[in-house]
Image 1: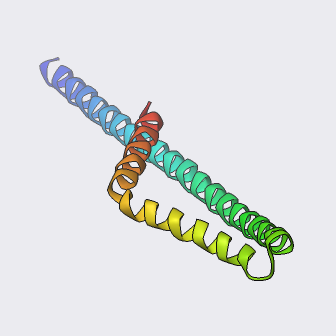
Image 2 (image 1 turned 180 degrees about the horizontal axis):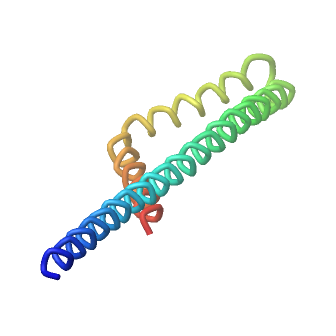
Amino acid sequence: MGLKNSLSDLFKLGEIKDSVIKLIEAKFELKKLEIQEKIERAVADAIFRFVFLVLGSIAVVFLLMIAAWGLNLWLGAPWGYVLIFALLAITLGVIYLKRTDIKLTIREVIQKEMDAMDS
């Protein structure tokens, strides 16, 4: 009987080992799927933001062209374009001077988004 019990115990240990291996593989697959889902959400969000940015930029360009044309009619020939150019140059200068603050804000937003994805 002793040999039979020993073999039985060994088979149970083998089954336990197989169950533990299957559990580890299942947890690995689950983590892999979670990571894949996070990446898919991030890529979809990035594509949406890119398309929105492109379309918004096109709309802003047309709006600025209309504003420059209207200012040209009101102030005389070149001054509408000059004013719009000056406005854009000042905006660009302010953005350039505040670039470190802007980069820091962008990093914080990205970190918040990544933390939100973790939960």
